[in-house]
Length: 177
Image 1 (cartoon, rainbow, N blue to C red):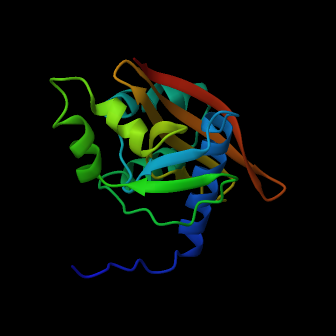
Image 2: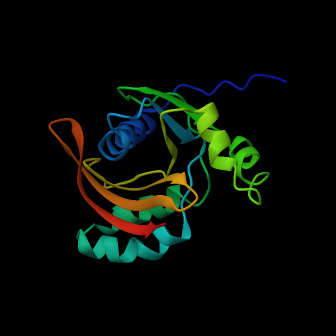
């Protein structure tokens, strides 16, 4: 099998990694977490799409942010190892996720097997691509996490760039289990 090498990220992609890293640090790094497991492709759930309008209205987002978000999330996008996080992380493929959960759905052991392979992790995190305003100082992002069969959340986040640093300004819960 040939090794796939991802090209170095563009300046806009580096901004995406900065947004993703900020969101992950804020929402999912806790004292007991020593490893983050992140899906290797972006994903936008129907619940995020359904709540985008209310989030845009709540946050008074300009049309360019929403259009950029929608355009970038029409398709899935490969992720690389350019996150800036204070703890170890790994990327996990859809096939690996399916090996844990599709094959073990009936016997319920998928999460046990997952945590045996990824102890002290945060479950599985997935992200959409962020949408930016024209000035690249405001972004909207979908981020979700599953920790167990009935333990997970999905959020739309509003981020702003202040003094060169991305900050989560608000979050809207779009699903919980």
